[in-house]
Image 1 (tube, rainbow, N blue to C red):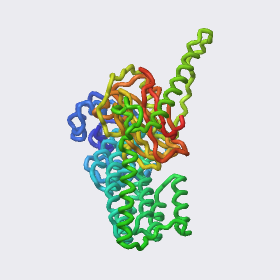
Image 2 (image 1 turned 180 degrees about the horizontal axis):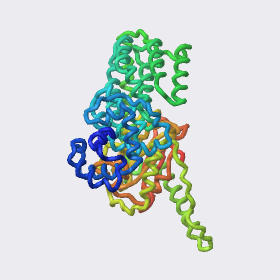
Image 3 (image 1 turned 180 degrees about the vertical axis):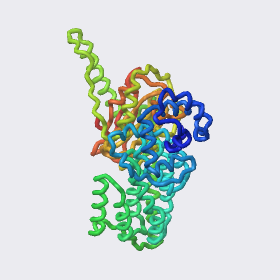
Image 4 (image 1 turned 135 degrees about the vertical axis):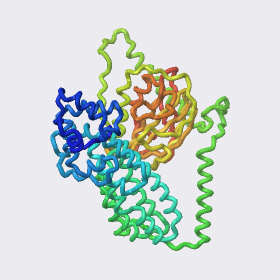
Length: 503
């Protein structure tokens, strides 16, 4: 609905008392439809206005909105954009949650349109109103700005790499990490904490840059301290600052001859190529000839033996469990009680909870699904953009697609996700302590919806897999191989060839 000020209503309809009595409703309807102030609303919206104006609470909230002068100006059709001030102390009022429900339909529509324009000043002022929106609408508004900032930050990376002097690096930082940007970043809610940590990652890039200096790193740390970071990241900044000041971290550029640089670079290129050949090219098996043209070409005979052993162990465990359940002398005690302990990662918990609620939907996967899809789920980052100390190679050796979700179980951490088609292979980065969910299904929706499942068709295996997270071990090797494998005609299992995961 298009917002209308209470003062405007009183001015246009002086004979009407607000809230409107039922006896005055018919008389107001005719005048309201004919009045210019309601012209921007559709017929259903006009009817909604007439009903709402009978409510004492609705009229009270119209009055509150008008008292917040900057808010009322923003909601006017061509009103100026001024920051939210909370002059009426509405945020601390006992009825604030009710006021949120009232103002969100008016405000979210206005902010959505405002955030589409690439304008730092408009973003900075508009984002101050997030506190008035419901969580879902606030996330929708932030996502537009986040995407703009993410792209801007991504374009900065190659510029940093190409910088040829400390002054050039300093100028790049000064132009991009401005006080206005800091103010904007601090307005994001915890759901978009990633928008701040990507600048912490820039600090690491600067520290390792060949033209960086102790002075430049300390300068950027000082700038980053203006961000409202969590305790862990603030401590990381303090530790970094202390180590740089104590010369425990060398960041100054060093003078190296061009010939030496070329020699080192050439050696590194050769080394990288050799590693790539060893890691990526299929290993020709000396035995097991029947498997030469299968998906297992990428594994050595030793790794295949490990996989066969793991599969045998898992199948034995399943059979033992099934036999125990099927014993005729075993007392039936009902279904196993599963207590779902909420994840600390707010975004992961919200997604998983939404999906659990859809468990009653009796949808069945297709027999096969082989379409490749490089997208991530809405409000999550792509697997390709993820950084980490462990390189994982994942192979989907089943007839269904899988959806992979990776996150660290901390409140303010980001969630990464992606699809792997039937028979597909993908690589991504991991860090010790991270959680991995592998969820099977069929038919990835053309238009992914945050409120829906990541597949059109799922069955109980999808929902069972929600309760089976894999944790990256603290002792994980730097390179790991994972295979999503069918144990039988129904069950799936993630084979961890490298021993990198804990279940």
